[in-house]
Image (cartoon, rainbow, N blue to C red; front, side, top):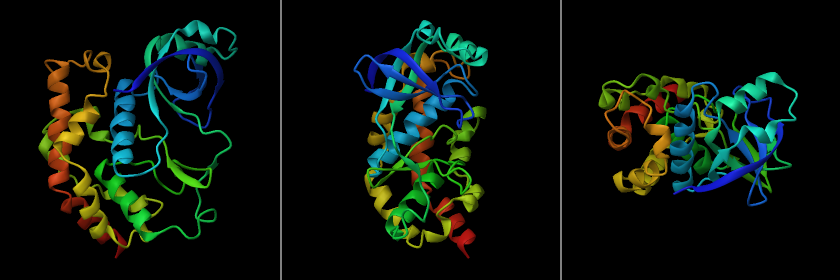
Length: 257
C-alpha cells in the first residue's frame, strides 16, 4: 500500500499545473507535490496517477514516490488566493502526493541528446498502453533530476474512465493520439519494447497496483455496485489491454511511417 502521511504545511501553489497542485510538507519532514481530489476531474485523476505511475515504476522508469496525504485545510489559512482556499476546503481528507523533485528541469532532447532508442520505445509503449495524452512537446511531463529522467503527472491517462462502458471495447482502442508523443519518432524498437513490457506485466501485477487505490476514492462512484466491483473493472480493462497490445503497437508503427 502507499504510505499515508499528514500534510503539515502548505508551501506554495504550482501554477503551471492546470489543477493547481501545491507543494506541501508532510509529517515525515519531506516535501511533496500534492494533487487534490477537489480539483478538475476529482478522484479519477488521482486514480489515473496511481495506476499510471505504478505501472511505469514496474517497467523500470524513475517515478517519484506516491503517497497518500491527509489534508486539514487549516494548514493553508495564510494563503491569500481565494481560489486556492476554496480548493483546500473542497479537498479536506485524503489526497495524493508525489515526492517533490527540487532543482529539476523539464526534459528536452537538448539535455539528453544521447537518449537511447530502448528508453524512447519503452516510454512510447507505456503511454500508448495507458492512453496518456500528456507527453507531448508542449507538455513533456518528464523532469531531469540528478542527471536522470523522471516521469511525472499521469492524471490525464486512462481518459476512458470518465465514461465507463463496455470495458473490453475501451481496452481495444489503438490510441491515435500517440502521434503527438514527444518521442514517437525515436521509438524505433517498439516491437522489442512490447515484448519486454509484456514480460513484466500481468494480472497479478495489476491487482497489486489497483489495491493501492484508497477505498474512499472508490466508494462514491455510483457506476459500480461496490469498490470491489470498481477494482475488478480496472483489472479487466488492464488485463485485456495488455492482451491486445498489438492494436496500439500497429498504430505506433502506422504513425511512424
